[in-house]
Amino acid sequence: MELLDRQFPVDPQRPLTLRTPNQYADLLSIHVNHLNRAVRDATGKTTTEHLNDRIIAEARALLLNTDWNVAEISYSLGYEYPTYFNNFFKKRTGTNPLAVRDEHSTVSTIPS
Image (cartoon, rainbow, N blue to C red; front, top):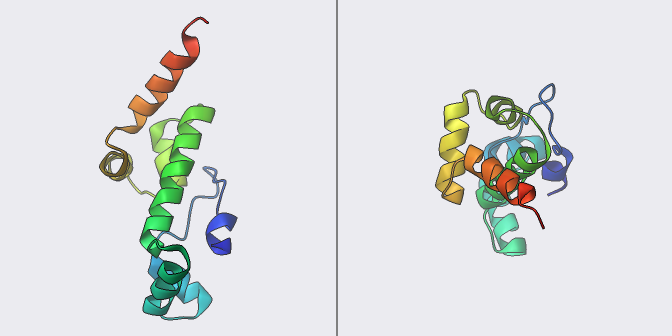
């Protein structure tokens, strides 16, 4: 979890480098099955679920708090192509990244 936390926040000059359980296991010099079992036993979630949740949370934060375009966000989160990021985001949230940004800007511009 500490290795995961160290990767955030991201920026376009320093994109996310560890994106799979295998990459974390290699860095920790353990077998990926051992990592997955230990993470699941300790948290009740798989390593992949933790990674995906953190990427989605960071993507939402970047969409809501920066003026980066989706291509910059996708690259900073380790995606080679924005389309891959859009598909990942939509699959896990049910909406596309621009809809999240548009929803937030609509909410923040409504007078009180």
